[in-house]
Image (cartoon, rainbow, N blue to C red; front, side):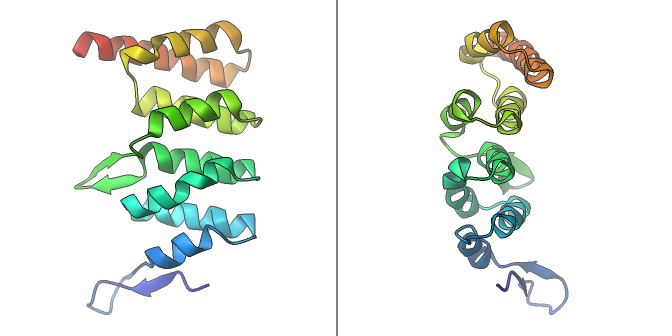
Length: 154
């Protein structure tokens, strides 16, 4: 699969072939899917984020964890990152439904840092009350604090 091609027109630096990366997301090899996710995150397009969303349910936890990051804040426009329009419900789904603690931690981290909101206080409190994994508990605590701070600044 050809992923790199010159895109700047000056014949100098290589760029990312978005079409090849998106096509690679359907490859049967998990390492190819993961590499394509990394490329799409670097590339920062809305199309890449949309194409990455189904990989939130990939068979491999490493692929799902990377897809969490892309869905959360994989769009780059003018130096600012944003995510999928449905990032919050998709992250909440991964927090409560994924069997991999790595994916659940990643979703909690992204929700806490990139999407704090007063409406999420109860979710973070529930995680603090019920979760025993130290890292997930830490991210939930940060999410609770940041969500309360978002309430103050609203």
